[in-house]
Length: 572
Image (tube, rainbow, N blue to C red; front, top):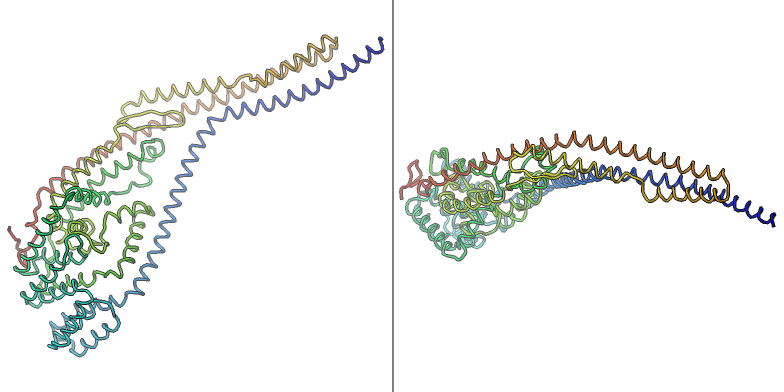
């Protein structure tokens, strides 16, 4: 009986030894896991902060990479588009260069008529669909007094493009001093026009009208047509709203883009930045529009020495005004140039392209005036035409500008949000710095206290201590003093080791929040300084709107139309 009891106790002791070993091993593993969990928990805030910063940096990197690739692609493609224009339409340029050359050669009688005939006939063969080639045949035949050939060539030119042929010969007749012929050709040209769908070459008529090149009868005819078109379009339902939207879009397309190095702290730490960026671009638009309109309205226009010289300039503009066949490639070229101008921002370039509408095949008369006033380069409008367009549309411009100004002001945030790390606040003009700094410090203290509260003995620790306690009790009951002492020592050692580890984590948390107390107020003050600068610049730019409004109030259409080709002005 005693031998069996001894064997049982030996087996129990052996099992207790193995359990003790397993418990010690388990305690070590629990300790390791507990330390790792505590360390991870202590670094959560750092990881979150760095992750947010990394996401922002990555998004900015992706955005810049896309812009850079779009810019490089546009620079490459624009070269290809221009080469395709040369390959497909270079013969058009040859015809255009000869047109005015024939007239100037006839003025001084320096080129034999046979040479002129051969040249125009060769260009006719090389340009089977181009309207200007038969016009040159007709012009050369007219100069040579060959009525039959001139008539046949004129019929072919009219068949190819009646509008431009009529306008071309109206200018040629005016250059030759044949005012009756000029008036008849213009009458034919105007009869074909629909004010809701005009071709781009109407800008040539406006240029000649503004410069007083058409003679008194033709100028009166032009003036009547312009007033009729404006009256007809104004009577249409929704015209006023359409004009305001049209001019607002055209003016918004002039908005400057903020530089990458401007307001860097607001951009990084203010969730309100998209609205602030849009509002600042709108405010700077006032200055750009003022400079644009002042450039149109101020200064003397260059005056050519002779009527023939000025008509030749307008003829050059007419014949150089590319045709419908070229328009798709010209549109591609313009969009690519705008992408390059916008530093790779395709969306911004497309907005500007849509606002310009200067490369549409046909537009209504008021859109054409908008194009001439706002985008003279792509509309082929001279400064005289720009002035006339602005004068004719002054009331629409003022109304649209008032709407634009109101929109810019209403879209300007009254408060700016600031978010740094886990803290956020609001300010109007940076006046509440002390309040925000205190709020930030309170948030850091709260975060510090919350982080410390998480650094304590957890369920895993208590489970390990409980197991060691059970082993110690079992060993005491079985009077196995060695195992009891070992279990108790293991529990005390485990507790002291864990407590020391937690103290290290608390010190790390304290150091982290001490650094936050040092760095975050500095960042906040830098953001608030930019808030002050932003408000000051916005107010300064917004004040320019009154100067532009006064500039527009002082102009009239009569002020910018010459009564004849001289420096005199027409008085209506």
